[in-house]
Length: 354
Ligand SMILES: Nc1nc2c(ncn2[C@@H]2O[C@H](COP(=O)(O)OP(=O)(O)OP(=O)(O)O)[C@@H](O)[C@H]2O)c(=O)[nH]1
Ligand SMILES: [Mg+2]
Image 1 (cartoon, rainbow, N blue to C red):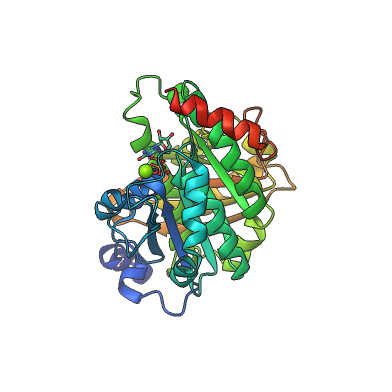
Image 2: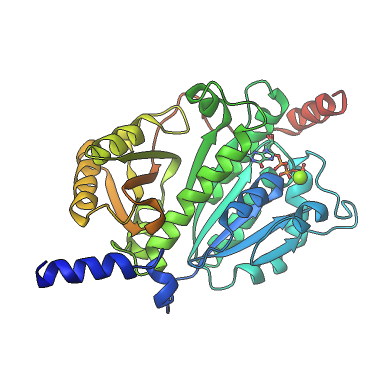
């Protein structure tokens, strides 16, 4: 073994799971990941132990908040909701957020980049997320919403989801949509009950990957300004994952990623992409570079691609890629105008009728 090989061996042995764990994240930009409503807060439980961002659980439902492991928890309390949730009414969720603007602003203080996570179709996530986004934008943060879209059979929820999307497109830089229907198309064996947990996990992986790449001593570090450049005016986005191991890990991981956007859309036409590559101990820097080159080649030449990478010693020979692709087009998501009073009334009556 020559000198270089010996140093490489030693690095392999001593390399911590996340280099940031040993070095600390220093004076990094402040990233907040806010879960809003039941689904958004549940997704935060998948981010236990995260150091690169502050997790903030926001809900009108005190019982759900108690079950969430987050750095900060904020109850949107009003006299009418009494900590029992917004009952499926986005307008109630919106009012609760508006009545607690100061508390929300305080919880977001100093944030440069905000990831909002919510399930659309209920009252709190749908109604409060756009208000939280507006507050963060006023404070100068870049806001990326990652939202989960209801199943086709949940007709009333979908109408509310469209209402929420419309508001989010107005208030956020980027709105990444993950569609429950698309997931169950991609994995037909998945049950109705399992799908939400899978999406929570995917959202958590994607935001954690980007966050770790910005604030930690990543193998390939993402600059906050690169992330902001891709996210600003990003419009409709989605998330995709790919993985591989063995001799063709790079080819397999990249191929899977481009095949697997969690919203019916083509990643190749994306305006921008925030990509995070995680490689196990046995994955070489050359393989990570090769993956980066391949990813850039697969996207259209105009796509602005920002790539970060980490080593995870628990993964050995495996490579996992997560991407948030912005500026995509989807036949399913056509943000509509805000509902008229008559439409809101119609929806309220349909909900009351069950
Ligand atoms: N992906 C995912 N979706 C969920 C989860 N929980 C609920 N959902 C879906 O997300 C949408 C919104 O539900 P919730 O988040 O429970 O609603 P909420 O925002 O808390 O609103 P209220 O309960 O009315 O105050 C619905 O379509 C649910 O089916 C979850 O843990 N993960
Ligand atoms: Mg709820």
